[in-house]
Length: 597
Image 1: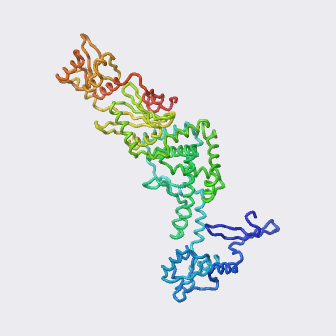
Image 2 (image 1 turned 90 degrees about the vertical axis):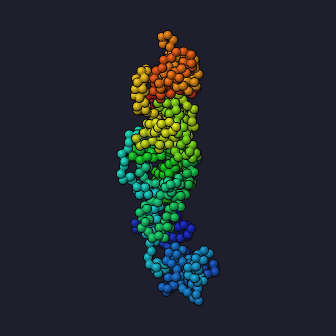
Image 3 (image 1 turned 180 degrees about the horizontal axis):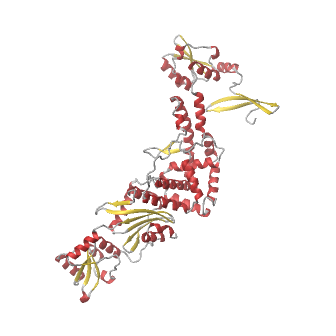
């Protein structure tokens, strides 16, 4: 009753066409009776006759007209049904077609080309035209198409019927993959509760709005209930796909704009992308760790939340109206979600936590694991670790920077900080370079170096630890070489050279000669560690350099290189290490999460 106007009509718009319904309400013994006449055409045939005359076209009553079969065959059935044009007769090589609306010029040109005839147009009522098309060409799939279009308009599809099938066979995850997944989950657990994780899981199993295109970063519309679309004729299928695509593409564009403008919503969507990466690792797959690379996950997350926030939204058209006109309500519901203590452990910390996450992986910076700056940066960090013979490299996020530190024997050093937005691209590059087991091999100017990569949860985000494994037979070979030349073998990891001896010879000279003074012995003989047994000439060069009698001791070359670097560093490091980096370099990744920021 609210939809009817003063004359009792209800106007229904289907696309660009308007169809009137007539509603009548009468009392009955059981209550109010509503009678709705479907397909009424305002003033009936007289209205269409007047309309045709006003537009300058003849009027044709199709109910009393029977075109010959050969005339019907002049125009392909697909064009008849799609463009709603019916051939009704031929006179003097001129084909007459019936339409309900004045034709567009391109349609007339197409008909002239197909039939090789001139075209005359007669107007008729829309209802009579549709009935005549079904009567002459047989029942089409129009009812089936309308039914499927209604099915496809629904936004609450069942899981795994949205173009993304459930994984049939899951590979067994490696211990390194499980550790990486646990690091991501531990990081998310610093803010979110198990109830939020359950919400993430429900959204992951629910309907999808888009997916990333194969071989590109473009977003493709997911067609719901694709198994129904496949049963349609090509014309009906193209019509339905175009309708669904247009609606969903419009929704995607508006959701993207909202995420770009709303920081907390973008941070929450990135958190969902991290959750998906953790679940993929648990299933034996290797996902992209950078949340900025999962734009489809952002859109699908916000799409699912909108459906849950507003249950009255039951169609793609209603969803488009919501995201076009009522996104402020969606933003308000998101804000209330972040204030709900059953979802968020500390509502007061949610805004800084989400803002830090968006800064760690900005959506406006097109950097990923394959970007040349990121690839070269990761190679540089690993090569530096090998150059100084570090035993461990740590990459730890802070609130405003990305901390990089080395452990060289018993000393810890901080490298120059990196921009915070490089965190996830660097982590993603490290994981993509490493084997599924976490093994990582550094190749460069020196011999290959075997490493082991591990991710852990630090207070400000996921952190990476690269352990440089000692070369298998290097120490054993050095011991055997020392025994063969009757030299003492020393391990330098815990030894400190006296400062007064280091001042005797400049450090560049010590590096060039690969020699480290260890102390004075009886008679003023200087004990010097070298990497290889010296020749008589090299021994004389050492005596001249230190201006003293020397006794050489043999050390492993890697051990000596690390000791020389450790002694060449200033005693007070200008960039103090954070507690998380110290724990990561000293106690391993499992202890990093327990440190205070």
